[in-house]
Every structure is written in structure tokens, then in C-alpha cells.
Image 1 (tube, rainbow, N blue to C red):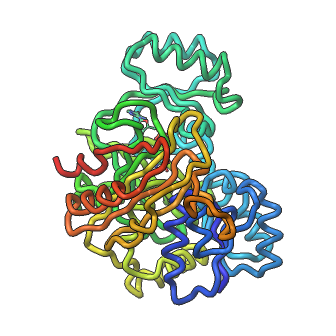
Image 2 (cartoon, protein in one colour):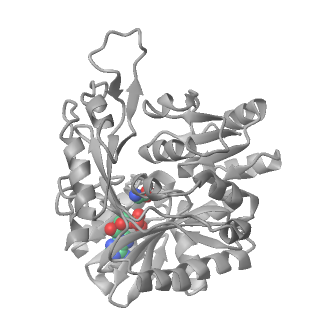
Length: 432
Ligand code: AMP
Ligand code: GLY
């Protein structure tokens, strides 16, 4: 089988790494991939939003199945395009991708189908939004409707901060059209968890629970990032909590989507706040989470590609009857090493040292994100240089979360590039 994976992050490296272990695979391609991915897949210099070029390549190369990492090509309708040409692809259609593309769509959908989420109101007028903030008082949360590279959510502690968020989104238009409409919602309290499931719109196959660390600095301080590390499983998601999430959130969502005529196939990611009034949805993503995927995938003890194919073909029922996914009972912790300056402007082209020593470690996988592999002919100091904000996901497995944390950080200690920054407390919340 020929498999194509779209994307260039640690998430995609984890997917390619696991797919490469499938008995069904002959060759893997990645668009555009990264330094680490290029060691196991053939990488093509095409952008993930160049969906027509991707389709031409897949048709020419007769790709058997394509797996989409990021949301942008999904929102652009890559799944619709592939399906129209009879090509198999894992991911939801553009219509279903609105669950992530538009927070107004997602919240309105949740309200309609009684999926638990924070109380909210939609605004397209800044003065009305500011009046409403006066009424409900702080803390409150201001969210841009559209995609804003993870920066469109402001958890405001004061009325002034919330009003400033309205000004920057609606009047200064810092996110362009994504801020034309906004949501103001109730501030929820509790621990967060990421719940990812595979669905073909008939069956639901949950993946293991996980928890992300969105802030840049230890103790959940500093600016929001794409995610600085993750662990799986998340002990706060007990068996009872998991059951409640599946019943009250996931099953209701899939049923609602079906009722709307939106046949969802792919992975659905629910960002959940575990409040004292039960689990509530913070957001939906229509793709694998990053870095969560780097902590989940190493724990999959069966053939991931079989689950991917079953999802895209609508045969998850059969897949489940055959046993579904088996899980490695060990815990997994992934620590993100980022470039100096991230999540703002960051440095690039810094040689990365210690990757060979890291590779020799047992129960450790170093997933690459923003890295580039230099040609063998180059006489550089290192085979890899940095090329992105998040550079590596140093991932350790252990019998306990504590052991996995130890493995990951022991390995981080062997790796180095100029300006490398990482959190020192990934996974600690699971130990409380
Ligand atoms: P989102 O992109 O909607 O997941 O929001 C990003 C982050 O903002 C979440 O991971 C939470 O930490 C925080 N957040 C979003 N909505 C709320 C809310 N209603 N109450 C408290 N925190 C929130
Ligand atoms: N880790 C958060 C996300 O993938 O959106």
C-alpha cells in the first residue's frame, strides 16, 4: 500500500512512525514532512494548503490512503476533492470541518443538541459586546469566531482586559475576518483533558485520554502556545469520567452531526474542561492534536493504519468486532523543545546536537517538528538544523507517569541547540 501523510509537525512524525510499522505499508510519502519524517518517508515540497497539487500527486502516484494532519486542508475541502476522484482519505469533509473552522458554528451546534459547554453569546457589534461584558463581569472568555492560529481565545481576568480583546478582534481586526464575529462566554474552572475519537459516523472508537500544556512556562504561566508537552493517559479522566464524556458529549455530537446530514469520518478531538458540574466542551478540533498525538500514538499496540482505513471506509463496526485498538498500558510523556523566541518570532537554522545519543535511549522516541535534514554531502556540525518554533517532541514511555517523565527528561538532557527552551514540569499535574 502507498500512504500519504499531510503535515510537517511532531504529530505527523508520530503518525508516519506508527504507520511505517503497519504490515499493510509498502511506501510512505509526506507533504511536506520534516527532517525526522524524511528518514522514513519520501517528502515532497508542496504546501499543505495546495490541495489541487496534492490531489494531482495522489492521483499520479496512485496513493491508496491519505492521512490529513492539520486543519487548513480539511477546511479547504481536500477530503471532498479526494472522495470525488475516488481516492481514500482520512479526515472530515469541509462541511464537517466547520466544527473547528467556526466557533460560532460549533457553539450553536452544541446548544442545539444539548452538548454541555460554557454559557455563551455571539456578537457582531463591538459596543453590544462591551455592554454585555459590563453585565456579566469578569472573569470571562472572549473568542474570535474563525481560525486564529491558536491565539483567538482570551481568558480575561478583568472587564478592561475583556473589552480590550473585543477592541483588538473587532475594531483593530488583528485576526482579519476571523474576528468579524466573536463569542463571549462563561469562564470555566477545572482540569483540562483532550479526548480524541475515531468515528465513521456510525461507530465511535475512543483513543486514550491525554492532557496538553498550552502555556509556554512552568506552572501554566506565560503566553499560550500550540502546546509545550503532553502525557497519556490523563488520570483525571477516570473510567467513570470517560464514560460520561462519551455519553454526554461524543455520542450526542455524532448523533447531532448525523441529524444535520453531516456524515463525519475521521478523528474528532474534544477539548474538555472537567468542571464540578461535569465535563464541558471548550472546543472541537477536526484533526489529531499536537502534541497530544505524540503521547498517544506510542501507546497504540495494534495496527493504526487498519483503524485509519476502517474509519475512512465506514467499516469501523467490523474493526471493532475484530478487537479495535489495543493499548500499551505504559504511560507516555512528550516534552516539546522549542526555538528561542517561540511562540513569537523565532530563530532558525541552529544545528541540533545529541540526537544520536537520544536515539540510543530505550523506551524513548524523539519526534521531529520544526527540523530540516541537511544533505549528507554537507560538512555541517550536525545532520539536522532547526526550522520551526516547536522543534522536537522528546517522548518517553514508563510503567508509571513518573517513570515516563524521567525517561523523557533524561533524554532532553542529551539534546541541545542554541536557545532551546522547554518546560520542566510536563506531566507533574498527573502526580498530584
Ligand atoms: P480553545 O482554543 O477554545 O480550546 O481555548 C484555548 C484555551 O483557552 C483552552 O485550552 C482553555 O485553557 C482556555 N479556555 C477556553 N475556553 C474557556 C472557558 N470557557 N473557560 C476557561 N478557559 C477557557
Ligand atoms: N494541542 C492543541 C491542539 O492540537 O489544538
